[in-house]
Image (cartoon, rainbow, N blue to C red; front, side, top):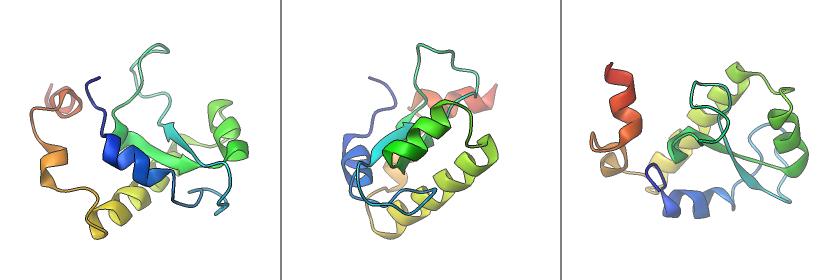
Length: 102
C-alpha cells in the first residue's frame, strides 16, 4: 500500500498515547477529515499513537483536527530524533507529497 511505513507503524505501537499519555492498548490513528474519503487512509506519516479510549474519541470527532496535527508533529519529531524516520521516508516519490504540490 502506498504511504505505508511498516517500521514507523511498529515503532508507534511502543509509544505512549499522544493525547493522554497512557501506555496500554496503543493503536496507530491516521488523521481524519483531510479530504481522502472514508475508504482511504492517510499516509502513515499523518498518524499518531493513541490508546483505545483516545482512538475512539478521535474516530468520533471528539479530538480536534488541531490537536491531532499537534500530536502528529510531536510523533514525527520523536521519530526523527530517535532515527526511526529519515529523509528517505519523506521522498518525493511518495504520493502524499505530490498531493501538496497541486
